[in-house]
Length: 141
Ligand code: DQA
View 1 (cartoon, rainbow, N blue to C red):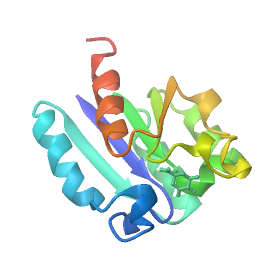
View 2: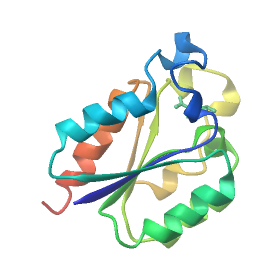
View 3: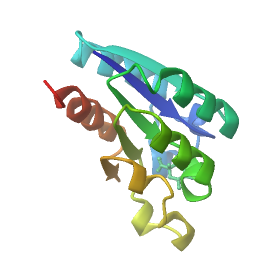
């Protein structure tokens, strides 16, 4: 099975960025843990700070992978275009947020992506990605 993990803007700074909110571990380090936990799954990882690049990646892999785990960062709250891209492809998606967006500013409470996803995991830290991969791998198993 193949799962695409997509991280949006500022998530390249995980480990350095507001560690009290997002933790002190880098995503690349965490990715190794995921890969070890799912030895039979091919994890495709892509991070971009650019909305169009995230859309291009969804188009490129969204018809072939078995699932998409997406943390679109702040684009979650702004991007109809990313929502349209998720709706356009066939792979099921799970939306992940490291922090509990509902315990934060009101502008983080709404997501354009949630309605196009099978489900949403928020506030469980990096483990949210792990749980999302587990769920997507279990689909159609
Ligand atoms: C985030 C939450 C977003 O509101 C924020 O803009 C981020 C990270 C999270 O993982 O908690 O960049 O998606």
